[in-house]
Length: 326
Image 1: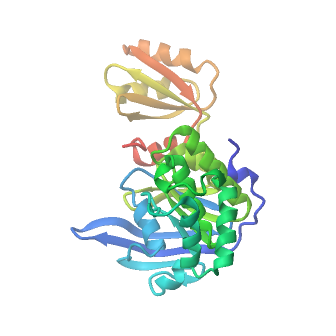
Image 2: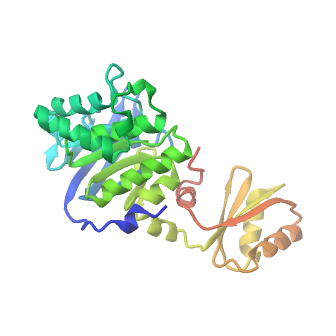
């Protein structure tokens, strides 16, 4: 799939989201978001990438009026969402993690009544509902009850409903969690189309492929803080390696990592993650035989070996020393 970031022609200049020292402290002294500063520009897809518990959903909740910040400010489209939540809700669209479709209504009725709720005249709401059915490939399911929809279709309907009133910003919280690969790719394509039309999108995700494919820029989060913020390409280049060699072996893996950095040409560093050593290398020519030879020389038996380009998970491991899925 072509990255949305590489196909969009939108000029990204005007700021539409700003967080200033945004903080959320839950009862029990649980710090979910810690003095977060953030700026999102008009027309971009911006991602919050991190493991469960990183503070992504709480951040999105504060920006969409669902969570009241402990301190700091959250501005969306020039509106202070804490001071003026009712006004803010008029300019945002939200797709939460859970299915919030009205089960007593048909697919078309979920769209139509959403438009009416946001003050659209009946004629305009009908036209908008019809338009969304076509755009989101749901026209054949217009009269079906939402309970009859697959997970992928239900998620498409939730996105359609969220943008029906033409929000300035669309917020998606883990939009493809639980979807099968085919439904996930279908939703990626729709989000890419919305991006090409100039829709500003903020999404939270723990899928590195999703962040890499969709986002113009993304912030890597952990423990309520932003650890790094840049384009996916620049984040991966910050690793300082052309390839990552994953080595499984028996014995002291810290010692093995140090040995490989010393003996393998172009090695720039290593990390131990679970039962493997991740070796960062400049260049790939002859690297695997060198790894095996160096490990054998040091008395280590290699049980598995692979090489790949750096990923956003590599960036996260470099920043935290742990796997993104931890």
